[in-house]
Amino acid sequence: MSILASARGLSFAYGGASAPALAGVDLDVAAGEVALIEGPSGGGKSTLLRALSGSVPHFHGGRFAGRVVVAGMDTMEAPAARVARAAGMVFQDPESQAVMGAVWRDVAFGPESAGHPARDIPARVEAALDAVGAGHLRDRRIATLSGGERQRVAVASVLACGPALLLLDEPTSQMDDDGAASLGTVVRALADGGAGVVIAEHRAERVRGLADRVWRVSGGLLAEGPGAAASGSRAPVVPGQVRLSMEGIRAGYDGRPVFADAGLELRAGEVTALRGANGSGKSLLARVAVGLHPPEAGRVLLDGEDVTALPAERRFPGVAMVPQDPGRHLLTERVDHEVAYALARLGVSEAESAARVAAALERFDLTGLAGRHPLDLSVGERERVALAALLVSEPGVLILDEPTRGMDPSRKAVLASVLADRAAAGAAVLLITHDAGFAATAADRILRIDLVARRA
Image (cartoon, rainbow, N blue to C red; front, side):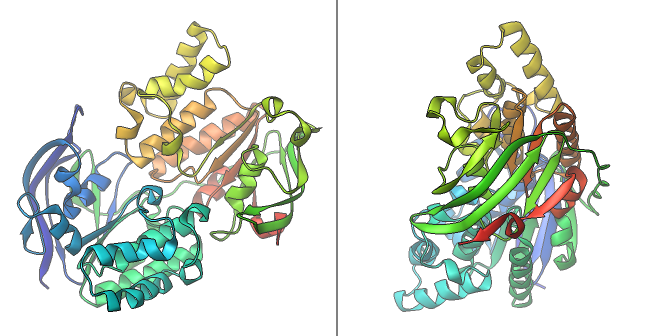
């Protein structure tokens, strides 16, 4: 087989970082090959994909050494736009990848920018959307899509360009099982047609069967070999009183109702996982629960009190949520300041705040990142910062929307332990996830959205 991409002696360190993200990496990606990259959060997986796409070092400041060649082009010498036409990359955070407001226009943007004939673009767009099971989204606005739907559209926008090398960074982290299966079919068909595919994925069980070989990246070093195994399940608990309940909730977007009659109870001491298809309303239900999306009908009760009837400044005390895209909600310029932010607003003393922040940083393995800017971190690291910043205030009701995005198995185990501790302290926890393995590990009960919300 011909070699589509290669790296020799590849090393890279981001500006201000004390250790390299990649150190002396050598690899080849052949036409027709699917390669899977596994490894811990922050181990260098995303940086390796960025190097193969040419965005490292051109769009990420730092120290670059070695040589990367993609489709015969040295990425240090060839224009970045030429490399990007050969190597299409889907990033960890699809929220940042969209450039147009509407789905069809966003998928068309890539082939238009690459100079494909105008007469060919509609067929490219339709084929790409259909390939990832997103044809029904073609007329939607990007802002109204769920996280998994945005991932499908992000993949379609790259497929429409027809790259020789496809680079996928955590592509199924927010997809339901049908979406992940569709992507697997697409990946295998592309490889069989002569493309090369490199996938970085923490939920390796979803894609390992597609891979021709597996690389493991840790501490910037690359080796061939299997990844880590998943952990076991949590022992059941006896739940306590109802902390939050939802009754007869009707809600939607842009006048389009998503569900007409939703009801859910979250009890003290219990971790509840909510699963369901992309676009089925899981995130919307969570936003209603924390007061971010007023329902058209129904009510939300917190410890028995109807909080939807209270003045805005008194609603939803002690209820906290980490959304699907926490990077958008980080407010400060240092990790430790971010974790301390909520405590300052709650009036916690300086001494107690310092102790709580130090404990949260240690629990989420963030101590070494305390002085870093949150937006300089990987998606998985930003997820941990957002979790630490939320949990440090010890909320009574905790809602997490796709919290394991970008997390390796060991970090998932830590998060499951943290959630168990919060539940044991009397909190009610709602976990929205497509990660079936994590749900089995962390949750006391697992519900499907179609059992708690009737479609409108």
